[in-house]
Length: 251
Image (cartoon, rainbow, N blue to C red):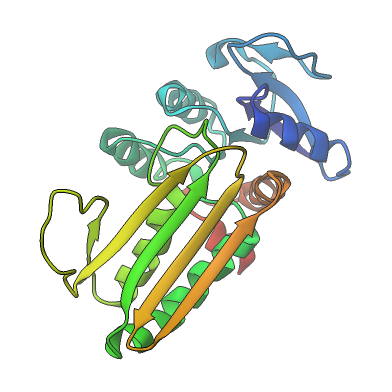
């Protein structure tokens, strides 16, 4: 039985994971951390993670970037593996992740969905063929109106997967409103749409002469991210210190 501390337990993803864990005999949530009240959970909830003294095997984080530093301090002190799902981290936080991964297992992915991570593999394997044939690359991502960061971490991960397969020759362009010029060949355009209750929609568009190839992923429910986070927690327990991602989980 994998014992989990749910960091951000009263948020939408924290509650989605809580519901799924109830149906999984291999995992249990032994404690939660969230500064916000109003939800009754079947496990104790702490407003400050430093107050949590319950034994656990891993932490799943779906909180906010502002809470990440204290979370990482806690996991380092307790020698706890952490599945970090929060997006919008700054450069200092990313550097801190790299540093603590030398002492504890850290699993971070921009998107916990199995489908998205399979899409990343597909792009790594096939982007060069289309790029070498002169196809321009654009990424359009759509999310609900409450999402604060843009572009999404998933959109950036998709762009990175293409760029890494092409010797990092591309520049990312997020806004063309200040330009009066034709599109350059060495750019990947990344556009963000925010509205309604869209869970997550990503299109990777390869636009060539007289043809367009589009790779798409649509999330219809947050359950796909919750399932991925639980699978990641099972995977990371017992692993050596290091920096892992969902590509490791899906094999």
